[in-house]
Image (cartoon, rainbow, N blue to C red):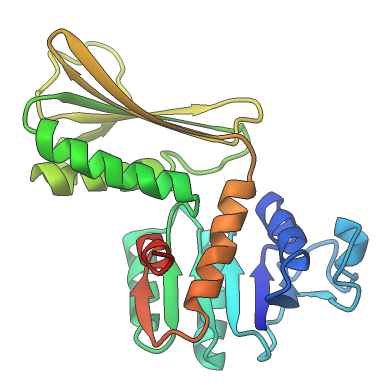
Length: 265
């Protein structure tokens, strides 16, 4: 049995993960975490999700009985729980996006003490998309015009998405480009002729779109599109549970979803 803690348990992702954990015979939820001033602090989690976890009280403090923490929150909350996990030697899975370079470095430093798995997207399909984009970029990266279009619900606070940034990073690595030199974010006004090595990321925020990512490789006379569309949040939630099972018991290190998926093979 793996003891799990969830940070951001009352959010859209947190609630779905908690529900799926209740259905998994290999997992036990031992801590449900939220911000100090959250309206549900002190309440039973079962009152919020309507099933299971009747003995789990929503709190702002991480107890030491967890084997692994799953985190889908904000950069500030992630950093706070990263310190708690490090102090208590609890493994950490995080899918929080919007982290800056200094915060990412803190996760990498913590991974010298505890196992940490970071991925901007926990979906198995999206991680297969990363692999496909890498393969195509090695073949077409030197000649194709490459664009990334990402769409999410109107409540998403960061743009572009962490997944779009990871896609751009994957393309640049495969095509020998530097992100800071070639990646731009949207276009406006008289932008001039498109440089061949430019990669533009376009962000859409509308309605209740769960998450969609399209990468286009355009040459004269043809266009290749790689597309992933999430229909529900279950793909992300199930991926995070898979990541937690992978990470529990692992030695300290900085892991990603590729490691978790390879472990399945």
